[in-house]
Length: 358
Image 1: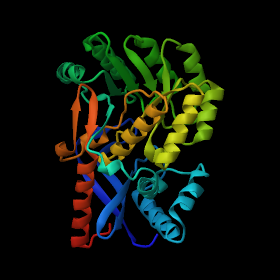
Image 2: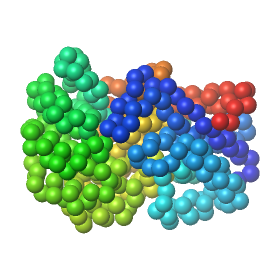
Image 3: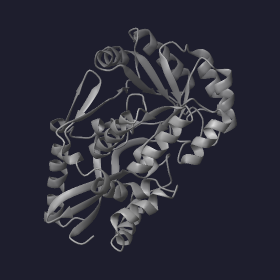
Image 4: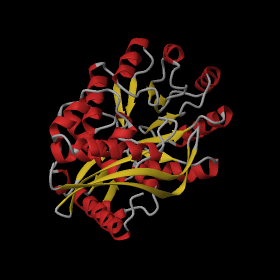
């Protein structure tokens, strides 16, 4: 533990365009970073970008908890400390910044020496009017095999939007529809009764998090559709419950919700053991969180666990877009871990110059 230094920082980054969810419009990412440094060189860094709606945690609460975790860790061995937290199921946004940084040191210390790491990703549709969709969907269709669209605010408008997109989609492309808990049971029934399952990969989180029985009813009544749960899944018990209730066939997981890299791996393994299809990825995170989810994706692939294309594209919403750190070719996201470390090392150096801690 000696020779390591830690710096916990609150940092807000502006978005190119507002990101509209059914429950909130986001104009900036509110992040807590943890830097681990040895001999004035950046060894590792972790991120937690909060999003009310997925948890009750605020940026300041995550920041204060992270400081506490750092203090606790300084009195313990790295591996013992991580083993302790891997035995609990109460991880989440408050632990992921520090624990993921620590896990890179202990379990994945060759990551940042890699030149390239890659995984398939989706394209995100943000158009609302038919005119914008007419421009956007053909472009996305050339570059991605799966496209995600947000609904959940106005059922009538959502129905029209989905039908229009389906008419524009070439054969073979898949559409993911995410309602972000935006519908009541009657609204969800109306929506599903009015659209065709053609080209739809799955419908994500149409109802609020605790509507297990109603999700089971939707799953039974609309058997031509597949349903995914995201906000409903916070821990392994939720995966058990989704299986018992027959509430969905797809589980959506995020590193920040799971609370650590190793816990994300374990929850993905559990979902796979139950026979769920798995989606991994976060639309509200910086490029560091994306890197760690791509790492998780590849580790699971090595174990023979198949996942759908990642939704780890939050960093594309950042201003400016860090085009020197990644590329996207034929729906494949290619990241440059060595360059990403250089970027965060420069960020850390600048923080030290300004003396900024939050």
